Amino acid sequence: MANEAKPCPCDIGDRMEYGGLGQEVQIDHIKAYVVKPSTVSDKAIIVIQDIFGWQLPNTRYMADMLSANGYIAVCPDFYVGKEPWSPSHDWSKFQEWYEDKKPTNINKEVDVVLRYLKEQCGAKHIGAVGFCWGGAATHYLALQYPEVKAGVSFYGKSLEEIYGLKSPTLFVFAENDHVIPLDQVEALEVKLKKKCTVDYQVKIFPGQTHGFVHRKREDINPADKPSIQEARTDMLNWLNKYI
Image 1: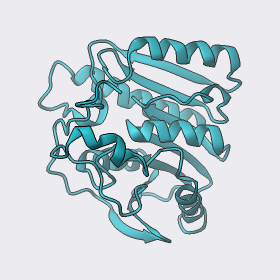
Image 2: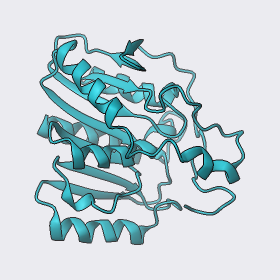
Image 3: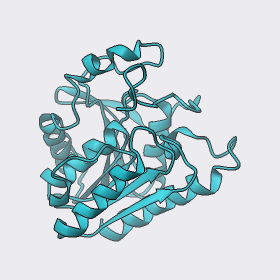
Image 4: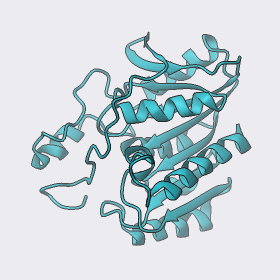
């Protein structure tokens, strides 16, 4: 973590006044935001929240973007009703808040979502996209679920066993991310190069900061717009290649 006072630079950023194109549904014991493309599709993406939870408009905007590109997108509440982090919370309490929300303790929820996508949505090809906390969760899915055919992890803390990926994974990082310094990204690349047997790519965006892909609005950040759009295009290209 960056420091004890503020262990994650997860500001809300450009929080959108955005309602979303999908709907909230109940899937077994969890709620989820689901948006489907205009034409029938058997391709689906699990969109994994950051610390601000499954209802953050910015994350739903990304889910809608995936849907517009032909994917059924589902953003589940991986905190299972527990309160997400808020910018008004005391950052010194972050570790205490995080303790029962680890991105490696989501198997029950992932199993439920996978079953929903297969049985109720007709999905035959499934991927995962995650941001920050969800980026680490995407790592985890790529390690544990070979049926998840591709992953895109945006600025997620890497896991120790990350070189054992079972799914092709794109890792997107920001050059000026104080939570994930470049030496950690380099260490990840070394591990992947030595051990990983599936396709992967690690990409660092110069000058960018944590959260830039989904928390910076391209319409009001002209200097960042090329990087935002490039990262989103990379996401779609990766998913289209493997799903």
